[in-house]
Length: 204
Image (cartoon, rainbow, N blue to C red; front, top):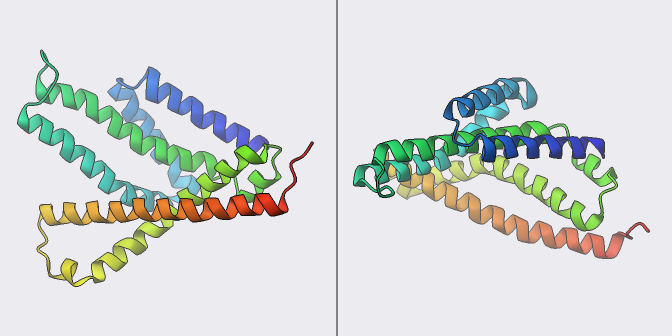
């Protein structure tokens, strides 16, 4: 119970501080990302961290491409310089995306499914925590398999290897991951609801 509460509070404080109060402080966002990467080397480990970064890379590339396109087209709010605005707006959000995902991994690497089940949290709220952890782990473990099967398709084998094709390949893999995660959410959520309905009695 204490592990769940402490992990949740630490993550909420991190998101509140970096995601709201210090969002525009680019230097602090870099420092936070560096500190999170350093901690991640030891917990949950550098191999897991590299996998996480590899999975996040399509999302990061897509954000960079969108912000870069806005800069090239000169799109920005009236009275602002395009590249200055989107660098100031986009860079801290990209850094926050990476650091918050890795920090979430760090916080809840100390919490197992058994810890959640043994906690005194109401089953109505506990099921969302369990489902969230299941989907998080499923997403990170399934992405390498999606890329593996994607590489086996004839279209991918015979396509050129330029930046445009690589970007489309990463985008397709990301879409597949989203669809897979949504399907897992529906199936696992239904199973959890069935187990609660038939096997669990709420404590009085």
